Every structure is written in C-alpha cells, then in structure tokens.
Amino acid sequence: MPKQKVLIIRFSSIGDIVLTTPVVRAIKTQLEDVELHYCTKKQYHTLLEENPYIDKFHLLDDSLNQLTDDLMAEEFDYVIDLHNNLRTRLIKSKLRRPSKAFEKLNWEKWLIVNLKVDKLPNIHIVDRYLDAASPLGIKKDALGLEYFIPEKDIVEKEWLPETHRGEFVVFAIGGQRETKKLPLDRMIELCDKINKPIILIGGKEDAENGQKLEDFFDRKHEKEDQKESLLDLGKKAYVYNGCGKFSINQSASLMKQASYVFTHDTGMMHIAAALRKNIFSIWGNTIPEFGMYPYQTKFTILEKKGLKCRPCSKIGYEKCPKGHFKCMNEIIFDFWLP
Image (cartoon, rainbow, N blue to C red; front, side, top):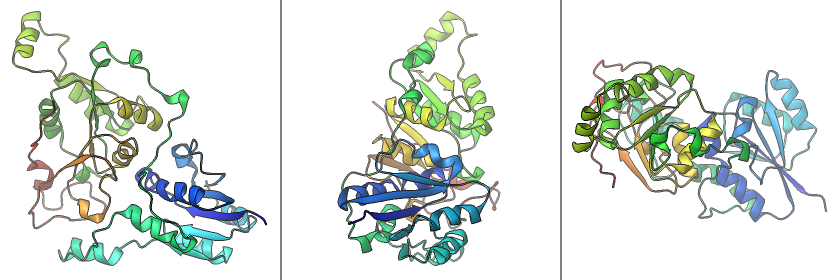
C-alpha cells in the first residue's frame, strides 16, 4: 500500500509558521506510513529546515503557477490549509484533493475591533490549526510548539560581552507595526525594571532603537565611584544591542539560554514559547483574546485593560489612531524577577 501523502500550506509569517508545528508533529506521529509535505514562502524555510517530521518542502518564490504545477505533480491525498487566503484557495481549486482550512474568525475579529462586541471563542489558534487536521483522525497532544535550532546557529556565550556570559534576559524589541511596540522611553523604563544583564534582539530595522537603549545604560565612560554607587543602588541593567547582528536561529539560541524572555506580540514570542521559556508578553493595540498568546509555557501578560479603543486593529498601525497611545504608555510593569 503506498504512503499517504499530506500537504500543509502556511506561507507566512514567523510566528504563524511556528504555531503550525503541533500539527506537523501530530500528523507524522499519529498516522501510519505518511509522507508529509510543507508549503511556505522561500524566506521562511529556515524556520522549519531542521524539523524532523517534514519529508519535503515546496517553496513559493516568484511564481504561484510554477508552485501549483509542482504541487499537482505530487498527487496528495489530503491538503491542510493553515493560511486560508485567496492564493491557497486557488491552489486547492487546481489540486482538486480533499482538504480543510482553519477558521480565521475574521467576522468575530471585525466585531471586537470595530464595535467592541466580543464573540471570540476561548480557543488558541493552535487548536484551530489542529481542527483542520481532524478529518485525518489527528488529536491534540500535550507537547506544545517546537523549534529546532541548527547546530551551526548555536551562539556561544564566549561570543557575548563579558557582562552577559552569566545569567541574562532577552528582550525582543521588534514588532511588525509600531502600535505593537513599546515607545523608546518605555523600553528604557522596562530595562531598568528588569535590572539584569539584557540582550536585545530584533531585525536591522530595530538596530537604531537598540543602540539608543545600549547607550542609555552604557557605563564605559563613568568613573569607578559612579559605577560603584549604581551597584549600591541595585542597578544591574547592562544592555547589549544584538538587533541586526543575529539571524532568527541565532536569536532563538540566545532565547534558549536566557533566564526570561520579554517580547511584544511577535513571532519571537512564539519561538520563545516553543523553547519553553518563561515569557513576559507585552500587548499594545492587539489583545491576547485573538488566540495567539504564548502556547503551553509559563507566561505573564503585560497590558492595559479597560481601554475603550482597544483593540483598534487585528494587526496594527504605524502610529496610534487616537494619538495618545495609552495601550502602551499606560502599561504598569508589575513584576519582579528573582
């Protein structure tokens, strides 16, 4: 009897792809003699390249038609659509194979964003992803997300400044939209509150803010007695700007070694969850109730509840539509790290 061939489609982005890993694992471990294929954008292949459960990748680069032709040649038995957009529907219409797509909850999200009417189900997006695989008999397991770091991308502590070779905290300062990120002055306040050696991670677009944070806490130019007085006051925040210096896999390696991870509502939050880190998750214009909070790991939500304007978008904006940005400016950093 030939192997059953199953295709998973999820084109983007970082966090959404990491959130599909329980489906990948469940299919490969719960079905007998299955060949599992995964279709994503070329630039996100590195997120899954070490995943042992995936037998073959199909990567979208420039031509959707070429990708579709390649997929048609495979003659899949079942297609699991974890993106559910126009392109994936076009692909499925040409494949003409049994399929199921996950429920995006667009109507429920529209209601809470625009009318503040909450019809959102209390269910994590991972469980909605798993439901798309339910016709195959797939069941939820208790193993959570997974992220496999290639050996070549493991960051050695000797590569870091001497101040960060012991215990350190990672702060992922990036975000797809400005309204999902703390303003710089609040990032400074948060780093001071963390009060431990901190490594900042993010893309090249975050490097400028990262450098400002590093410069603010820089003690290289202070006199010895000033440094001693800071230590007497319990000031232990040393900031190293790693934004733009590490790949996604290297950033994952740093998070794996960190005592805690602070992160906005971004893909790095989900990688941290896959690594079973203790996460402090910072939410601005979006809300955890959308179903994308850290999955099956210890986490603390930092948010400003009770704002009539929140959520103002399911994705985010480049600036606060109201101009006050209360969702980030009024968050109380109510935590203590031992």
